[in-house]
Length: 199
Image 1: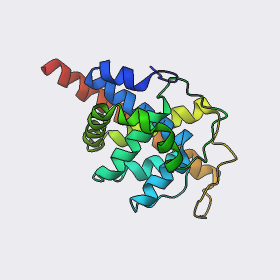
Image 2: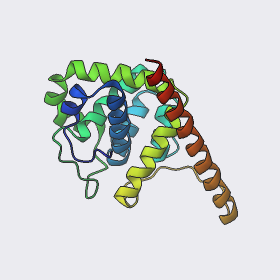
Image 3: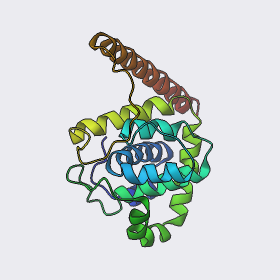
Image 4: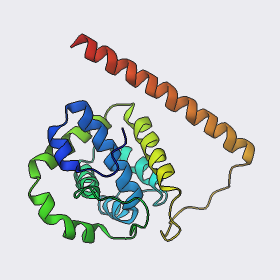
């Protein structure tokens, strides 16, 4: 189920653990898409390198730093600010807003939900230690990019110049990624199913 417009904190407080994990991954994916500049600010502050401020590159940088609790805490707080009022619009959103400005406008919300933020941060840290997390996050980011249409042109993309892959290479890259995601999801669902069965 896609959680586009919803009250994230209200749902988080009533959801079970599995639903909370799904909610967090969705909100993280939206944060990378809707707040690329703010996400990049967090990574800069934490000394984490990233290829560009495209949502896929930001997601990769975040999930590659699963032991950085300072980063996770800030990213989670940013993610919950995406849907603090349940009015999120994927299009026509100011994606160049800084982390400082987002936090300033969301301070009251964050202060009144400290316990939920703490729980979400620790849950995110635990999820990021699982091998399957990377594949699930990547898939969610792609899905939200598709809902949005495309990365906006008004976002300044800081990207290293590299040799562009040929059309033939791109085709095989996509086939390989698709196969990897499907296998990963299959393994994840198998593990979840057997874990729930054992309980």
